[in-house]
Structure formats: structure tokens, C-alpha cells
Image 1 (cartoon, rainbow, N blue to C red):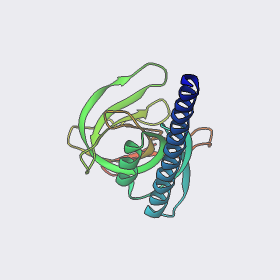
Image 2: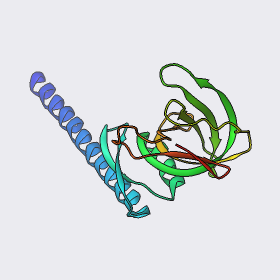
Image 3: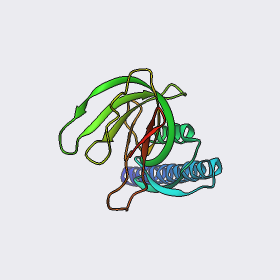
Length: 176
């Protein structure tokens, strides 16, 4: 009799656990679908796949003039490879990254007060020579999540032509 009761309790526990997992999966799917719909409603322009870090699934994210909303959403969902366009004020100039491809690096503060690291490949595009703290820089590139706000890379032309071209714009000059 005790064995029978233990078996019943184990079945109930396993059933509850399975129900919880299935319900959680459905909620996550609904959240992902809602996020996709909200992102698509921002603009119906060109799309580019991005990847949700939590699910490792591709999400179609539009290329939009409303880049701040895309950056905020990508940060909230820990996404990477989200093509964005926006601008910010140079907060900090950093030393170049000289390991592998060389990158000019600086921190931008965006109008929504987020900060992003810009890693501009100076092996493929010209360096911004007169960049100063307080300058405004417009950019187009791939956003990549990190806990500090994220980074922007691919701010240059793709020499192979497989990736959308990015750029930096500073004092009317385009660097790509």
C-alpha cells in the first residue's frame, strides 16, 4: 500500500513538472511571438535575422530609423547581430584594440541614456582622426548585447559583399 501511494505521488509530481515545463515553453513562445510582432510594427522596412540569446533562435528584426527602440529591445532580449542605425555622444575614447583586426574603440551615450561600445574596424575603414569626447557620431552597424549596454560593430563596408554595409558619420564625413 505504501509503495502504491509513493508511486501515485511520484506520478503527480512528474505530471506537475511536465505541465510546468510545457506551460513555460508556451509562455516563452507567446512572448517571443509578441516581441516579433512589436518589432515588425515599428517599421516594415528591410529585415535582417538576429538571434535571441535565451532561445538561440533567429528573429527577424527590421532595419529602422528608430534604432533606439531596436537597441533597447535587443538589450532587453540579449540579442546579437541586430542591424541598427542611431547616433550618440562620445562619452569616452578608448585605446585601440590591436589584437587581430584593429579597431578604433569609443563609448557612445545614446539619447535614451544607454551606452554602447563602438568597435570600428580600421583595417577595413578609415579611422576618425579628430574624434573628441562630446562629439556626435551617427552609426549603422550590428548591435551585440553585453551587460554594460552592448556594442556596435560592422561599421564598415563588407569587402565580400555578404553583410549589409555599416558606417560612422562624424562632422559630416562618412567612415566606412
